[in-house]
Length: 253
Image (cartoon, rainbow, N blue to C red; front, side, top):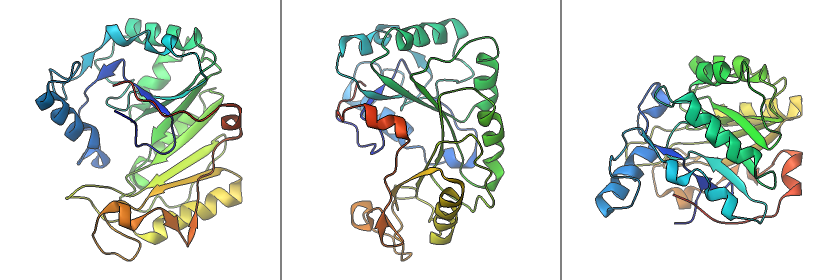
């Protein structure tokens, strides 16, 4: 199963499953996919979207020699409340032992992220990110910016409300996208454009992923038709470090 996430090259899920904690989680794509995989009898999804550790997947990246950009836990949150720190240590041991790869880690649980790294070092090949959905959740940025990861990024997807003014100090990359699915909430073009403007002003790489189910014109249709143009242009900027790694398409579910 190849990844459709445009800003990465592969996924690695040493745990699966999650639970909803903020408004952006309401129509979680991973929950829908996990239930589908469970119905198909896919190994690792016997519990559906219940949080589950996958120790048999811990060393999968070691089997791949070619430098690859991995999105870690596309089907879960690496810093979930039920994630034991001793298991997290094993995940980061694999990351350290595969310096040829880059690992993109995204969380909505910024306090656990902070707690875990209070007395641990962050490998140089780790990108740390937090999800921001609207102005109510941008407090996560303040916690992220203080963590000494080599690359720090924001995933502002699904963008379900204006985020207002952003302080992007110590932030390297911002991803923006609208929501997908039959129950998707529309994204106001002005919200995305204001984020783009602030990224330009503050010298931060900007990546516009998609409009989602609702187009720039406010019409609901297939997201492929809505495309990914913002203000008539493709915005697919990446942090400078990404230029050191070759593109590869592979997903480990």
